[in-house]
Image (cartoon, rainbow, N blue to C red; front, side, top):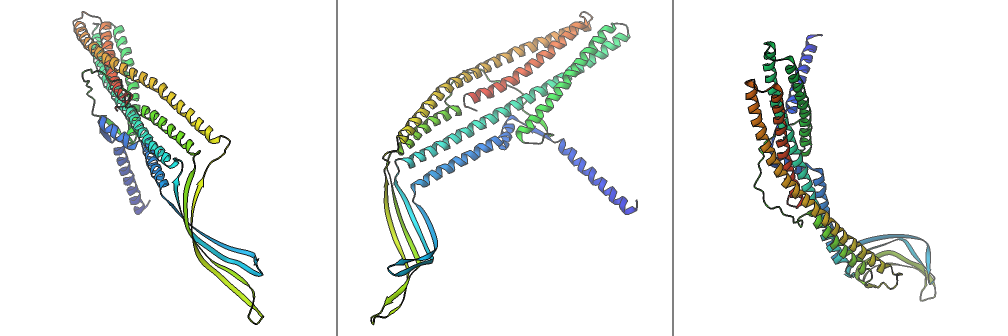
Length: 442
């Protein structure tokens, strides 16, 4: 390898090393994330919410389109004709070879049986439905973000707890190992601690795997790279004093959607009835035509014949009032009205059914909130008792009053109590979010 090739090779190596260092730095990017930031980022990148926004824009355009039905329509037209053979007109030839016609028409509906106003109401209802669907999608995104955030915190706290527990077991193992070498304890105690250490390490590895999966779930929801390191900042979980929980479901978007459906079905009945009424429309226009020729022979004053040709070019104004009255359609329109009324009844029944289901959901969310708060209080009491039991047992074991099995049991009880408190606190936070969603207050 000559000197120039060696320099090029070294430059490539340096560039690759720099690229790898940049990639490693980006892969280790850390993001401090509060619950409010998690919600905001989840809302900003949610594809479902973006689709709901697009549907709202479509509904707004539908409303604007429905408004244009009140206004006159202006259309232009142009026609070219080349016709063979020529037509005979009283011994003369009417030639339409290259005839053209161009015009403009204005059409104004005067009375349509209420179709235009009903269509406008339906478009307005469609916009309200799209807004409620957007609100419902937003609530779903917030619920998903809260669940992912609190679940990640719960698993991360379990990892920290298991790491602390593993450190305690390591310390205990060293103490018992030294005592075993001095002949102050049996090898059986050392084997029991080794088995306990292995179990703790197994739980710790499972918890770390779960923590990484929860982290990636949060990354997916907030729209960042899956290799981003998330550092939650709202790890201090507090609860306010229990207050009477509301059972009002009027704010639920689902209830509003069902009511909007009933309102739309009523408008559909009016739309069906409009087909049974007459319609009145006004049409006005201007048509210009040209290149129509009339050719033949004509007699002169002295009795001789000579060729005759005349071209027609002119324009005409027209105005027309049209009235259409449905007379007999074999009962089609009446059947449409009856069909629309059956649809209205079905929507009313759907509202009754879903009202009961939503009330049950609210009651369940209230019960979950109450049970969650009680579980937190119970877990806090259990943890205090487990800590005190562990402290007493450690002192007794250090004084050779309690056996090793009691110490291991006390440590295991402390671990379980700590785990129970973590689960109870984070689950109660998730219950709060679900309650707010169930009552439409999220």
